[in-house]
Length: 155
Ligand code: SME
Image 1 (cartoon, rainbow, N blue to C red):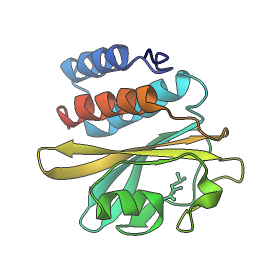
Image 2 (image 1 turned 180 degrees about the vertical axis):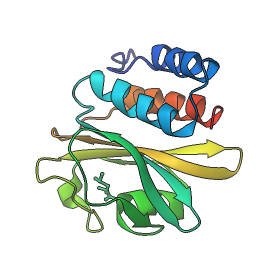
Image 3 (image 1 turned 120 degrees about the vertical axis):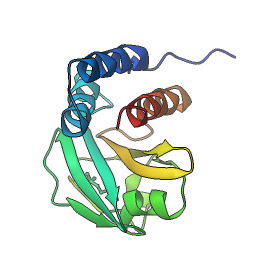
Image 4 (image 1 turned 30 degrees about the vertical axis):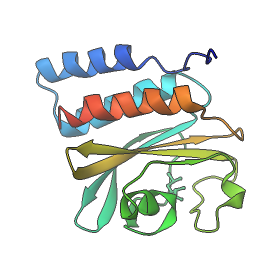
């Protein structure tokens, strides 16, 4: 079975990250670069939010797209907090079916939360919002996971 290629080119983004790191960019700039470049890929990357974990709180450190009021999310709350509490990525094809969902925009239909991990530690997450249901197939999820791993190595 062949799968469609991902919209996001993870290798290109990771090369950009490594280049920025080599020129002295550190955490905040690297997080912003991921948010900006990912959204530049176009739909389904409508909103890209980078949260880092500080104790039991996820804090929004960079984003591109619609602003969100959810700048601090406790572990366990919303899809973002649940991903950390359960130590797993969450792919929600239809956010209206998620009782714990914290809405950032009424336009959002699907959401993908991929953890940024270093070994057993969870450093944070990449949260992507799309205006279209069922936006993130396996290839897309794998592409975001590659970026999360590439980023983790530089944080
Ligand atoms: N929808 C997320 C909150 C983050 S904003 O969408 C950027 C959640 O349910 O945790």
